[in-house]
Image (cartoon, rainbow, N blue to C red; front, side, top):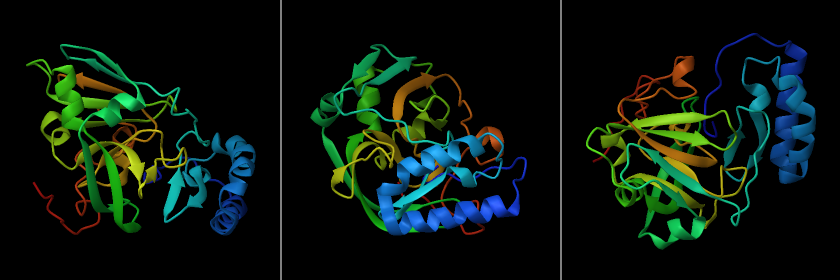
Length: 240
């Protein structure tokens, strides 16, 4: 989650938690210089931590950065490929250049994490997910879309109607810059009206399915329909 919320599990000791939070605060000050240290120090602890706190990496800009695998997976823009599979007429393998050749969509929206923090007025740019689906040609039996990350663990899903909203992007720019590896680049999903855990980072595959396949956090008890406001007692009706 970067966006994605921590789940339940076996608790770790208070000293470990406080130590991790201290390192996180240092990361806010020192930025990316501590990223490698976090990867070396926290990855071994990740295996015994069910709180999700070991997935909190140094802050990047206005965001808190999380990874459910305890490290930041890497793909260069030249290496990047996005597969579109499942119930489609034309399976695709798209490069970053292919995505950039589609009509670009720019949105400025708040980014809301289900844990409560919000980043206001974030500019995003990318291809509409609906345009990617249209390029592949969704078969009549396709009713939902599943997303897979190249971290080899994270997954998400939307109904086909949700996926076709104009405020759902296959994003390659964040704050008017290429999406960084820390933020889930080179390409990530951005689902504007839903909590951040729906916006799958390090996007590698889009699969059209007959039914909704619950994602990583849904399997751990989170809402499948994650409209902002639903999980914190305040209803923010999605636009559109």
